[in-house]
Length: 231
Image 1 (cartoon, rainbow, N blue to C red):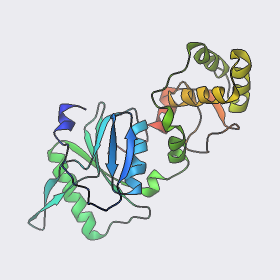
Image 2 (image 1 turned 60 degrees about the horizontal axis):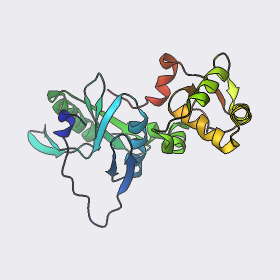
Image 3 (image 1 turned 45 degrees about the horizontal axis):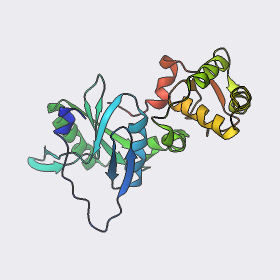
């Protein structure tokens, strides 16, 4: 975590007896706490997004002016993005529609963060749960930070270099060539997907034996993983 983000670490006290959602973050090397399922789910996007170097929940509050009165506001998250500003996030549930009062409130909050040179973004459960991205991230999270043997890497690159191929076929070829089990083959394939060595569309369908895998093209495919809105 940078010095800049470190200055925003808050002292939020989670209410005793209230359910706290805990997300084990490999990126942060810590347990990230949140107070709603939507906030917990948003952690997956922060964790997988390569543009996010670090993030915290419940940062220090700001004081914004509304109707000539000062009000305290605390964002749900603050993230440090590579080559961009710090960004504060407000996470809202599915179906959220802002009232006129909330529109006025968040306009002033955005303006206040602007003075700190920080972006402010509202994210809804509709965005977080769209398609299959969240479910696939949950399925693959345990493989973040894992590596695969060099010989497996080379085989996967060769198999997917010129055409798309189903996981089932890759699994069988890996197992036969490297004398490993189907389960070990699958783990290597999924790890390669997480490491962006090979590509499958995580937004469209659940990853499985019938999924097609191809060569990873950074320019075309990063958007599937780097999915958090930044502005």
